[in-house]
Image (spheres, rainbow, N blue to C red):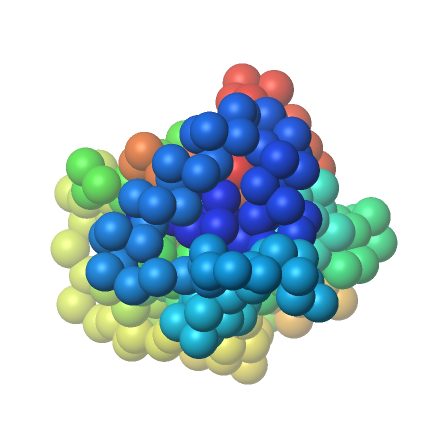
Length: 308
């Protein structure tokens, strides 16, 4: 069914007149009459009763039974169109909508809360969800369009995703207060190799950086325990087991109260890891994403114009 002709039919009925419908649609009356006849031809069904006295009905335009049924459907169809247009305008104007952010665990716990809080204060009608997982899990969710935007700790190597440097985070080599390495003026890589290492699971950004650090210095560890949380690792190490390379934000409190000690290793001085902003390639950027980036990543918000 031709929706342009259907809109013409609806206007004729609502205006009770071919001439007034033509004025409302900014076309000629002959074009309206021709359009209604074409619609009737397409449907193989008379819509308007053109018999004697047809113009004397309560509506002015008298419909056939089929025309009345089509009129009710047309009203519903174009009402939905108006609702859809209004909702899109609301979402562009950020009066409603949702923002689905993905983040790896450390970013979600220590970097994003203040940005999310500020966003919610500015736009309380936007529904925000934060999905937490390791870098690999978050990347898959982006590709499947279950997320709008992501911030992760590990580099993402997938042609379907755009990865941009977002922040730099310092990593610290730590051990428990009772471990002698925490009290040694300088530690060597050979000494570290003999230690029990607590590390994140494969797929984690923290694990990527730790493994790259060890590989760069030719270290092959024999004692590793994998744990799926940086916070859990920090507290296990603080309780007296092993060593770990962890984000500064995770260990600051435990260092301050003396439960963790820094391991003084020259190779680990000023060790930084990048944090990345990740988006799906060629996906239009919703207005809510653009607004969030104004808070969390002003450089990115300036570089890209909002699209919806």
